[in-house]
Image (tube, rainbow, N blue to C red):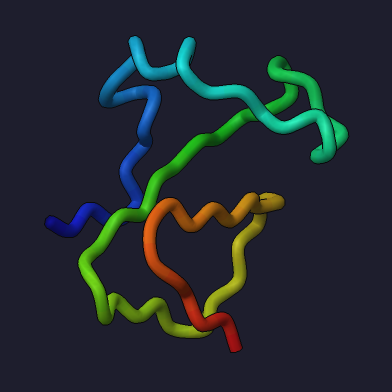
Length: 67
């Protein structure tokens, strides 16, 4: 399975109630403007790039090497 740049809550609006921004991020729910999900199989590589928004990285299973 591979999904890239999925607008998570636009495609699956009922998921929004299952997610919270951690308090440690220092933002309230109303200030989060974009929520995307990148999902992929083992070995998925993302090239060096610049994001214009702040990001939260979350690894659910396995490990990720960030260089």
